[in-house]
Length: 138
Image 1 (cartoon, rainbow, N blue to C red):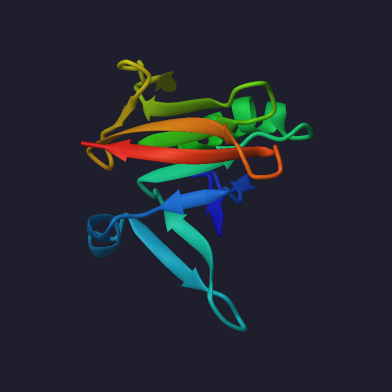
Image 2: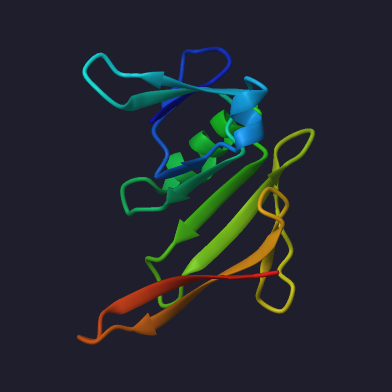
């Protein structure tokens, strides 16, 4: 899915997106169908976008998209970076001048959009490779 900035001169395809029923009903978000099939574009401001940082996308994910999503009015920007020894997980909240990081509460981050606490944990998988789990609690 593609998200356009209000100026429509920049667009992004987030790794994940969430638009609530209320956002769709109130026409804050509109899912545009593709010419062949499926939805290919999001117009408006979804409630949350997710980006996973890669070696080739650090600047884009942490600077460029952060600004684009803020300009688009997206309330929460979730940013995951699993490239190091332990994963980094941030829930960024939209403020007047940009996004600010949510403060962790004993390792948990609160999402206002979902009304829940989240944390990303890493464990060794059966072959010793990292395995990640997004945990949720009230």
